[in-house]
Image (cartoon, rainbow over all chains, first blue to last red; front, side, top):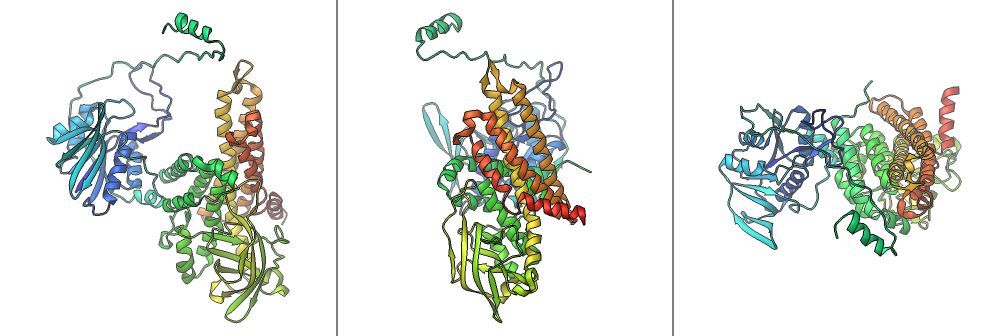
Length: 247
Length: 379
């Protein structure tokens, strides 16, 4: 069995978000890049499945759409334990564009993991689009994957409970948090070996983008917090009624 | 000249940071309070490759450069200097000397399990009456033909109880003074070895420190490192490398205290504004940052020299002396910035201050480093 994990290159979650002057692009100056947290958990689960006793998984590939500066993120995935990486050499313009680029490198895999969303633009669209473009089944909001004697068992959180599905391969699993406990820390040898693992760069296809960004708006700054002493309940109610207007 | 880290170095720094901030932080206060050895953490750090960072992979090490080692030790030390000294001793004082001077047979038998972290090592040099004056070794390793017979006591031994392998420095021929000293690999389970009580230390409380007593302990000749009488030179070379580790630890203590002080001063309010807006605090932070940066650069310079096979003894002495001294200053200022909160354990900085003190004492006091540096200036 061959697994592909889609890897998003996203700003570190503690990044201070700034935009360019006309507010049409994110200012990437000084930004540290990481593996999209959902993708990192997906990779962790893929590695656990590969290492499990009796596993028939031969290899785990990782793939992203991005320029050469995103290779650090792919190499981190290799350091953690992925076997090979593929990078489609273009900017990830929108979800359809990214899904289309990935479709050319995602053929022939038995199981594909996509994070449910990316922590930068939170589009939550690439996984489903890619499955459609590949013509394979997909299941969303996956919070657990087990392989028991070659059979795939998928669990999902649904409104008011959970659901367990038996699925056939090939499959694209759109995973959410809970798929793995926490991301792995790469071992030192893994880091040192990452550069010697294969990273294939693929030229992009001609694909039209379907969306363009008109403008970004930062949220209004949070109002200052007002502290009310514990014996001033009447004052608290007055503030909630007259100032916050929530009562 | 290039001040940029490589992609691997950054990944190693991040891995150490992740482990420290995700795992070590969880129980660091409890372990400090209970003087409890971080056995589970050391096992995890070993499986990540932190116990033999610079050892050649053919001996089960990670094959990293010294720059990466400096970055990793700093990150671990920001959170838990007890864990980092266990790591540092195993790496610099034990694995380094074995790899550099050991025979192939010694490396296969002893270095491999130490570099992979399956076993832990300790370095036994200090004695009740020989600390800084390492030439006055009283522990005897009498030459008995095919073995040495060891008698004596070693003091302040980090990892004494948790280690399986000891690197012992002992006197074979007192007439030859320091030229009669040998370095021996000793199995801790050898008959005749006993430990003193766990030392109740001011800081670094979760590393296990004991005295070790040797009574008629037989050590095979094949366990001697280098030629007869090489022990003192061996110890000095090992300590030269060890200083880089302790200097990096001191940098971590200082930078950890600085990071906590920055965060605290942006939250804590006094006189109607966060205390970071008071120049007295902001200037303290600036001064602390300059010291940390200077100390880190000294460590990196020493590491760079080591990586490039150039003499690094003076550079590592400068790094150790300066980093240890500023660690004490910076952690003390961090407590001051935190005020009353800095004096209670929950806020960590009082622990960092207690730990910083030891970096001025062990693996060569600040005064010994100044002797090393000044002798070089005046020769």
